[in-house]
Each structure stands twice: as structure tokens, then as C-alpha cells.
Image 1 (spheres, one colour):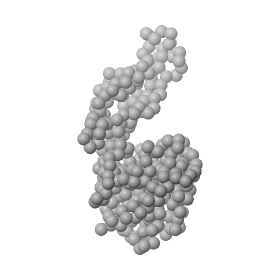
Image 2: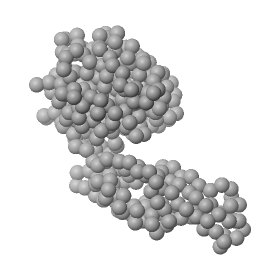
Image 3: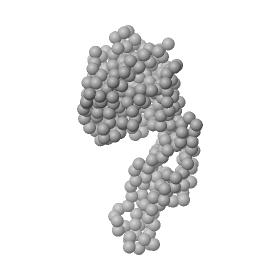
Image 4: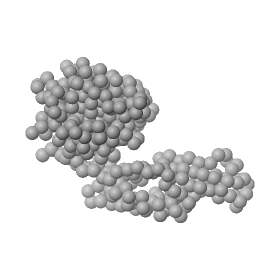
Length: 334
């Protein structure tokens, strides 16, 4: 039987930031083939592929997670309580637990499930979107998506809306500001209004939140900025179109326009009977896997430990989740 902690460390130690997932996908292909799964590559781009691995029968349940991570990569380490490293909880520790559960299931004769590991979740979900088309005819009833939910089933998640916003100004000598029009000043004024605005509330999901994560603009301190740009992400409790309409009205006052936009509305997941559940604020690949069956969202680890300089997962939680995944897959088979 595999050692799940050792497997998680092997996965972490293969850098796989978004768009650089090939090496870890190839490792998973070798490992799952060794365990007796029938593996199939599904090309997403010429250098990137999703990995589908069947236990043998028609997959009533598809076990899914993403193999990309956010930057920067850093290697694994562990102490008595935690496993650390990029992807420890988001989501390489989860993948190790899923595979350990799959190994147990296969050894006990259960064959009506498959793994699907996808690229690109941390940016545009290109892997999930591609897989949703390629595997639309599987006939699966459920897709179990692994994300760090603190080992509690998620019954709902906020939506997401990411926009790139551009501001136009007029360049000029900074000694004579009245002769120009600073795009950066327009950006700053718009951000203040965006942050102060009420973007919507819901009794179940809470409030829509907004984060201005990236700003760019200008050339030199002695030049009035002719252009500026911001990347903004909303965590939605309403539809993306509703937020976009309100955002466009604010931007118009500051000579700003949306140049790129993508998003999805809030999602509602299946929860096993009697199981504890919660609402999560983060986004996942769930909106893009609808053809694979009813979504179930579960995983060990906390999203609060993801994306940080000390990303970690408690080893006891990783190991305990193996039982949960095993029982879940058996329980939703019939």
C-alpha cells in the first residue's frame, strides 16, 4: 500500500505552477498506472494535459482535483504535526489522500470510479472546461472535487468574477500637471469607490467581497501617466452580470473600461445525508464540471493555509480523509 504522506511530498516536490503542470501529470500517470488504473491523457494545450485514470468499470463517481499551484514553488518538509510545501493543502495532499482511497477501493473490488486530475484551476479553469467537453459522455453520477474545506462538506460556494480594467489619461510633463490627465489618479479614485460600494448580500452566502489584486501604470515619475490597469476579483453572492453592470457605471465616471472579464455565479453542492456542511467563499472548478454529475466538494486542510509562504496540511487530517473519500465513493455508488 502507498504511503500517503510520502506520496504527498513527492507531488509537492515536483513544481507545477499554472502552465507548468506537465511533469507532475506525468508522475501521476506513472503512479496510477503502477497501481493498476487505466490512464488516458486529454490534451488541453500542446504542452499540458489532464489525466483520466479509470479503475475499470463505468465510473459512477469521478474523483477530481487540480494539479496546478500558485507561485512561488517551494519544496516539502514536515514536522510531527504538519506537512509543508507549495500545494500541501491546495491540492497535492488532497490528491495523495484520494489516490490512497482509490487504492483501497480497487483492492476491495470496487471498480466503478475514476480519477480526473486537471490543469489550470488557479487561473482560468481551462483544464476543467476542456474535460467537461471531452468526458461529457462518461455517464458518471457524481464528481467529487477535492479542495481544502477543513474536512467538512461544502454545501455552497460564492461565485467569482475577475476583471481587467483599463484607464486612459493624457501624458505630459509632471512639472505642469494641469497640462495632462493622470490615468493613475483616475484608477485610484475608481478603486476607492469600488471598495466602498455594497456589491450585494445573501442570507446564505453573506456579502460579495472585492479585492484589487494587481495595479500597473505609468512610465516615469516625471511623466503624467497616460494609462493604468487594475486586476480585480469579486467573490460573488449574485450573478456576474449584475456586478459587471454596476462596475461599468462606476468605471465610466473615471474613464475606465473593462478589457477582460470572466466569472461564474455561486454554486450549490450535494452533501451526503447527515453530514456536517458549510458555506465557503473561495471558487473551485465545480462550475465547469457539470457534465460529470452532481458536485460534491470536500477535502482536508484549510483554505486559510493555501497560497501562503508556509502552506501546510495537518498529517492527521490528510490521513483521516482517506476513510472519508473511501466511504463517500461507496456510499454514492447506489
